[in-house]
Length: 337
Image: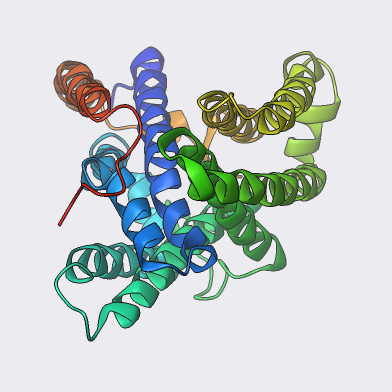
């Protein structure tokens, strides 16, 4: 079986890119559902919905691309990850489905409106929490034997994975709040700015807690972060995070900065993603399965890689076009119905 390193690593990069784009796009979308309880007025809730109505369902394209790409390019990894993370992944998918139904049904009823609103909140929170738990379980390590999952049913549940679940919830809420700063005016924007402060501080605390614990989950993580030559690569990341956080909180103090908080929040997520990459690379499933271990043969990967290289710009193109068409402020008197 011929494995070509550059192709396997290229596939890993494409999958990481797809997951990251999903996180930042569907992140602020889920963040609006998390922030819903802080906007009890129906008119405000309708406005929150209308800010994402044109784009919300397209955001999940990237989740499908990431999952499908993992199955196609790294089937061994797919066969290990799914049994290990069945519970949080199924919870996430059911929450996303329930949330999507709630998004549509809340516009069609008066009697059941409050119940569909709570379904939207619950679906958003459960989906975000499940994603964080799955991430935490992956980082803390999955037990593998004979190229198959060898752990137990509850291995995904740990204090660290629960911490990651909370971190994703507050991080998505920060993205949602900064999105509202960019897309709304008046009292809704003012409330979103206050919420961005609250969830920004909570995000800082969660990033700090996860960053302090991660190096001690495995000696390999500690080596990559605190010993040479890994220190040369890892050291700039926390410094960059500190700078971005400073700029983010400063931008929240300036009322005419409406786009900057959202952009800085996206950069913050990107830096966290880079930190995750530093921790686990070249593993695909820490601590025992590397990218090369899980890769399919060259002929299979190159065939799919050509298709991915063609499709990825097309998906990026229509996604960017959709956001460009619906740029600017959302009118509270018009929108999705």
